[in-house]
Amino acid sequence: MDTSQTWKLKRYGRFVQGAKQTGGGKPWQIFESKGDKPEIVLTLLGSGYLLVAQGQESLDAIALVFGPDAPRVQHKSDNLMFRFTVKGETRMIRMQFDGSSTAEAINQCSSAVEKLMEYVPVTALGVASVHPNQPPTEVPAPGTQVAQPLRKYILISKLALVFLYVQKCQKFTKWGSGEG
Image (cartoon, rainbow, N blue to C red; front, top):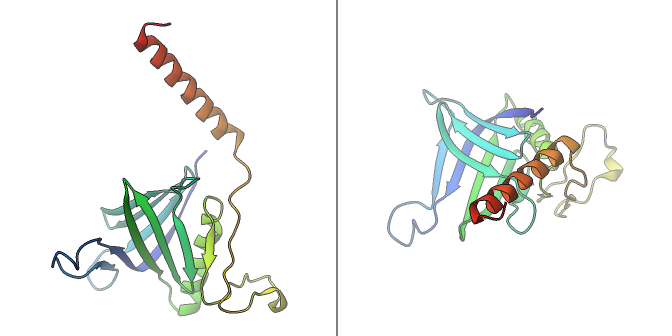
């Protein structure tokens, strides 16, 4: 069973590569959730996809894959920054979490980081990330980076689905080549 979790974003930015060089305007395209604009929602699907939408409009969809194509994720305060490559093009996105206070926005971001770490490593920048149940003596010094390991397990049900898919592809390939 795939589960998903959502968080509200105050601001979402997408780096537009080449915008400054071509005279096309600002290098960052910014979406905000204020006034009459619909709210921006970040959704992390259990299948390993990250979706960002404003109202009914999809702003981005990112596959949280393992290996060299895995997005690099950095966390600071109530912000997340993603850097990833799609078809040879490097992309960056930045999101700022929403909350009734800065502390609530930081808690929302920390909650998202906790879920993201099930899929990709997340690096903390500039400020130490504090878990509510963590004593202050265990907090790394400000300015240090904390890399989290990749998930070391996979659900048997997901492994079975991948196995069945691979088998189907192999049968299709053999059938198409006239072998089987």
